[in-house]
Length: 454
Image (cartoon, rainbow, N blue to C red):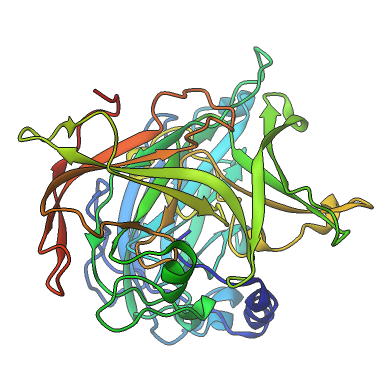
């Protein structure tokens, strides 16, 4: 996830959410096809943007707009006034063939925006009654809901800027509506996740800033203090990591935390659901967790591995082994963004795994001996770990200037059962200059080679 919070902050944030007013949104402009480079909302004073129309099961409908912190207006739902800003209304017309829901499913309504510096909420009404909502104030770049077995007719969609949890007063976004069917029940089978790494967009020696953990980096230094004291880091090349679940089923992890402080078991289990419903599942061992005292949260050990290879003149790996190897821990898997290649495609499920829920014990799962943390990634969603977060680095101290292949692999030890174990790796070609000096620089210069080692 992009934005971390400590366990000690969880209660404060949750109580703040209950007390604060949510901000609302104004939608401006509308467009056609989704722009993978980012939301394309244009400016307008109108609170009513172009609509979404769903008529066929395979034809998604797209729009776009801009949410603002404009003042509330009368005649809008109570959620708009509660947020303290003007909601913008987007019409949704559903006119699907009769009996379409003989195959279980519904109409997906979704929005996506540029980054988690800002938060948007999504609401759907019919005849003045709320029939769907998707809200979140932490670490989200998309929201999605499903109008299950939606009846034909006119609906009203409202997108709201949560101004209390946003840095910008105006946030462009893209919107869509389309039919989504549930996975078929037969043949009876486990519905499995499938991880794919997305290529990095940032490599940098910039100084990271993320105050939640109480750790800092000195001005001009690319390493946090704890990265130096705990791991001996000297020159931190920082980069983000994004992995998507493009499979049919959820990737769900369950941290088993003993109530006995003297207990030494740190088990993590992967839950696999079956096609006949969530009451049918199996739990299999998926590794271990550790509690990071300084960060005050739980880590899932070794979920993503990073390797740095020398590159030859054609951008391929040189040598028989990487020259740097990093192991990364993940502490809060969550649905942060609808995966760009999946936008408007079948198989995207409503956002389910959210922060900070992944840091809070689930009361319904408690047993006499254990508490449980539950986290995961829904089909069609990305989890993103930004470059400025602790642990997002490779120590390049002592390396010569030149081109390198940065390779990242999700679930490198295949501890989680997937439908495809061959597509978990991603690479980019990077260039390092002035290594070992205050002017050190890192940049992405192209696509990397395939993920099979020479």
